[in-house]
Amino acid sequence: MLGSCVRAEFMKLRRSPIWLAYLLLPAFSCFIGSANYSANLEVLTPGWENLWTQQTIFICYFFLPPLLGVGCSYLWRLEHAGANWNSLMCAPVSPGCVFGAKLVVGAVLSAVSFASIAAFYVVSGVVLGVPGTFPIAQIALYLGLGFLGSLVIVAFQLVVSMLVRSFAAPVGMALAGGVAGLMATIAGAGYVFPYSLMQMGMNSNAMVSLSASNVATIVVMSVVWTAAAVAFAILRLRRHDIHAS
Image 1 (tube, one colour):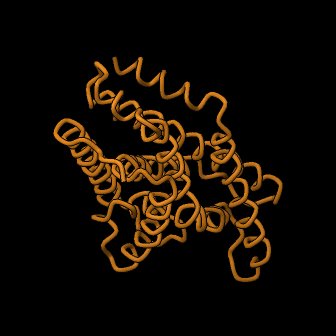
Image 2 (tube, helix red, strand yellow; image 1 turned 90 degrees about the horizontal axis):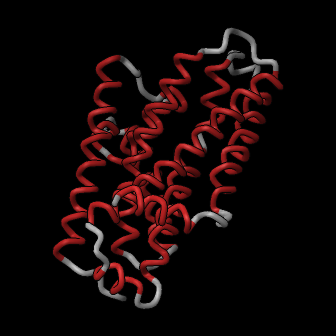
């Protein structure tokens, strides 16, 4: 049943331009970061690590959270249109499959953006002639932890978009969450704030120390927050209807 629901969600996106946003927004962030890196080589030590911090500082705080919010709002758009919500509530599909399918598709959209981030990072580094050995293990860790943290944002935004029929309001909340995540990280509370986990995992601007214990904390808290969001959504779908505003 879950597989059928996932296929149905992908059918909604088959001809959607939303895929381009997940591919091209990382290119915009890469361009800004590369320009900053090139313009500040007198201050920055040339190398792959500083190129990473410059390229991800904008996307992980300001670009990617609302982009994930757009995807989540889009995934609930059809259900909130007309009387489709009534049809959904009457369909012989469990709430777990309904929400789980959207989470899977949201994760795929996030994976596309992270693959795009990695590709543009590598290409721009080669074009700019960044010195030193490419840190494969380190960048793989940043990407893996960042993607895991992004699943928390996807799960939370799916809950918000499920409850709020507006398309734009949840996107605004995602942007606010990204900014709040930055503030929480600065305040030392990033490990317990859901919107901070992706930022900390990507380690943009080298704001945290990714020791073994910190990596384990990010992984555990990402799983806990994602599971909590999924459990809340399923419980809500089972016990309450979503009323039109």
